[in-house]
Each structure stands twice: as C-alpha cells, then as structure tokens.
Length: 106
Image 1 (cartoon, rainbow, N blue to C red):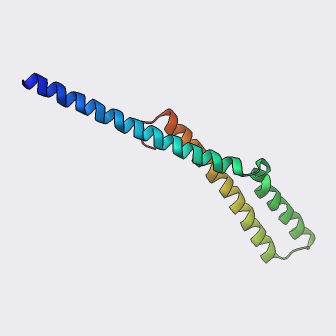
Image 2 (cartoon, one colour; image 1 turned 180 degrees about the vertical axis):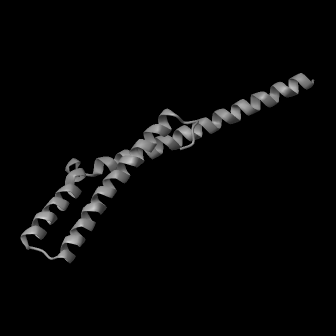
C-alpha cells in the first residue's frame, strides 16, 4: 500500500509539473505573439530613425540652423527612438528564448 501511495504521489507530481510546463509554454507563446505584433507594427526604417535624427541635428547645429537647446531636444528624440526600437528587439528576443527554453527563468 505504501508503494502504491508513493506511485500515486509521483504520478500526481509528474502531472502537476506537466501542467506547469504547458502553462509556461502557453504564456511564452502569448508573450512571443505580443512582442512579434509590436515588432511588426514598427516600420523597418524606424530602426534607423534615431541615427538619422541625430545626424540631421548635428548638421543643423553646425551650420547654425538650430541653437543648442533645439539640438539637445532633437538628440533626446533620437535617443528615445533608438531606445524604443531596442526595447522591442529585447522583448522579442526574450520571448524567443522563453519558447526555446521554457524551464529556464529569464
């Protein structure tokens, strides 16, 4: 009877682990789909927007078309654009890792 109890307990634990794995997999798939949707919503040229803004601000400031305050504001926008792109890239990468390695905590 003790062996049967241990077998039942082991079976229950295995089923519990399997349910946890299935749930983790479903959550990883949902995160991947959300990250992919966000990734696809940006224009591929948006990844270069920050660089282009920065270069344009540099030229405008050097030629005197804008003052330092405007230059700083444009540089801030450029950094925010680049940061947004990198955050989306990171979210997508994390989702892919969670799909490939569901037992690891990221």
